[in-house]
Length: 244
Image 1 (cartoon, one colour):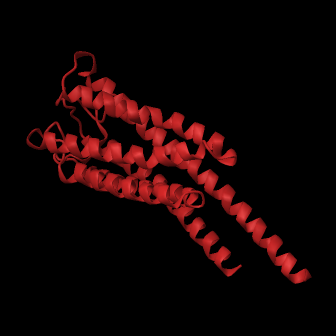
Image 2 (cartoon, rainbow, N blue to C red):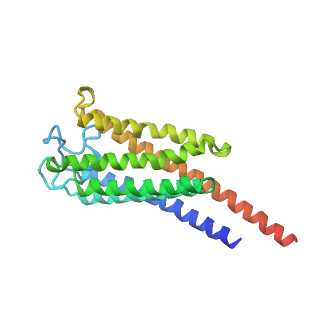
Image 3 (cartoon, rainbow, N blue to C red):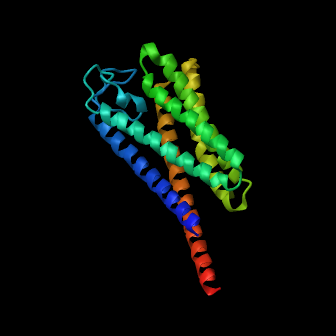
């Protein structure tokens, strides 16, 4: 009974951490784009932040792409920190749910998640500057493919479980924009004509972030449902003990 209580407390902490970090990401990034002075890769003279033409990492640039001081750069860095935390909490919860059915798969998920987080750190260490563009691209691809592995493994596994089949199907559906985004990003960098379009790539990047956010919320709801079930089972067990 005591171990069950500890597991529920741990689960509640993970759920709270996921919610707080996701909220922190959107709040910080909102401030970063509000304070961004302007400039895109195609038009350095552009004013302010453009949803369709500025990449996520543009908000971190110091100076901004128009050459002026970027007062929102620290908010951008904070947003990336919150994004990293969101992914850590999210993958930890996914691995935890998977662990009850397949410990081996859960270990692989944790390993892929750790590699993806290292790749995300690499995108900050190697910013999207002309002299570091190759390293930045490599870090992005490494982070996304490792992250996709950490995400697809549990959701494919959920398809084989009767109680989690719908959860698995929705999860895989939401993974598809992320996969398409990285393919388009790779095509952009090898200069395939149709994909060599900043507006297309930026739009797909934003859609991918929204998809990951929805996946995080979906996982949070699932975890809270599991916690509620465990709590009720604990209460039943306690009542049975008292009646004996």
